[in-house]
Image 1 (cartoon, rainbow, N blue to C red):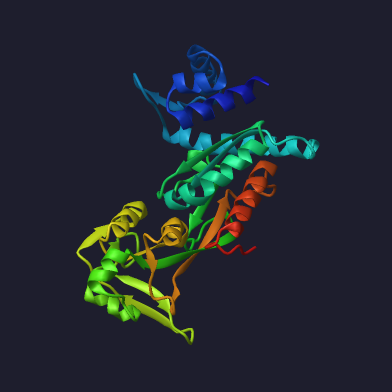
Image 2 (image 1 turned 90 degrees about the vertical axis):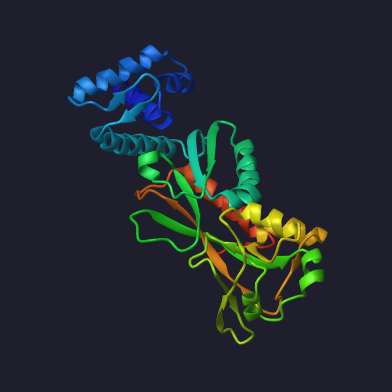
Length: 302
């Protein structure tokens, strides 16, 4: 199947950005990579890549061609799985996930998943940027928060809860807030990922929603940086509970406002719309959902 090999080569080159990287991944020469892509361009009468000395970028036609190539290769993989449903998972799997959740929970879960399926090549990319699954060649993305309208398929696999906390050293100097509205007095580490950044959400004893205006002199967009600053006595933080779990357990951070419910965000698995879900994608989603359900701070919901 010469054309199939050419499509696989083109997809690898588009994802990796160079003939040399694609050649290394595919186990062929860079010359062969160039020849296969040239064959595709000759066959379809249009340029797929703009070549420079170091990097190859997709043309407009190449971007559209990439989307269709990925779809074709995915459908062929599904057909292979249908023909041998009991066979071991194989091929490649590319997953995108947010940084904090990836470091605390998904990284270990995917590591165990990869060990259980040695014939499967798994790539986990951690970034808070919302990738374009189809254009960038991802099979699956894990996202925290409400999802915008999309043609992608989604499955809710958990709930991400936040914790209001501070170091004992900070509390010794400033005291504990008694209610969310006390956070307006200052000393908070402002999270610029929130919208708006100066409002933290809680729930009262009767289930009423509380939008507490907070203030603080320091604003950051990194959860890990906020965690470190809070541990050092830099102020009150409102962070993912899964991230600060070790700090709460060893006492370097103390949970605040325990009588109030904290904000939470849904965790979704999303994947390109298709009639048949590849087994490797479905298996990865199940493994991630299981890992979330075992977390002290993530509540699995199917």
